[in-house]
Length: 120
Image (cartoon, rainbow, N blue to C red):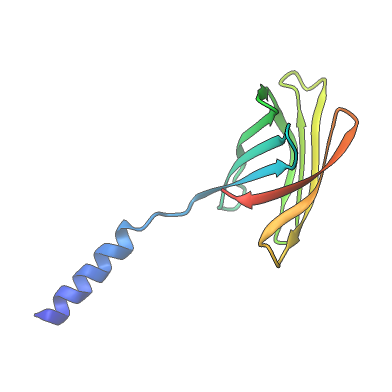
């Protein structure tokens, strides 16, 4: 009887665990007026980017992601204004095994800054 109870409990725990179907990254520059990029995406083949948010200082900037690439070794992202006329941000970062983050650069308004992206 004890064995069946253990199997039932284990089965229940496996069923109740989250599916991990979505994920995200939070990217931030250093300094007093940081640039913060929040990304949400699916973990299944052909899943799209469903969240792209840009905050500079305390101001949220409306954006749309026109291109993005995430692999085990690299993250690339292009954000534009909702009307697709103005380039708002370019982000290119490489995987840093030591810190388990993507580290690289963002370009915004003609200025390049260092950025670090962590799983969110």
